[in-house]
Length: 78
Figure (cartoon, rainbow, N blue to C red):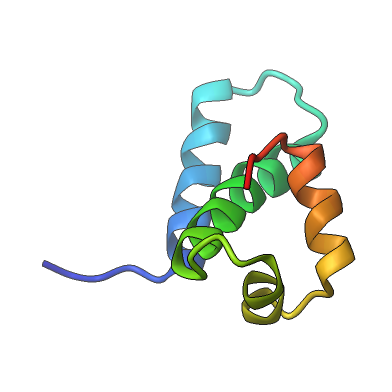
């Protein structure tokens, strides 16, 4: 089985999204994609960091306050 990169998966999903639209107009793609990627990324990294926000922030390459704002935004409980 061939492994796919995250980039390939995103490209494939966006191609399928536009195909499903069948020419219908769309907007808000930026926010849609960022939300679809950011929430599960935060959840997985928090799990890998044993729910430790400082460690998760370090793994993500962001500061802890930024992480806390994102957790509040997505209503992710720690």
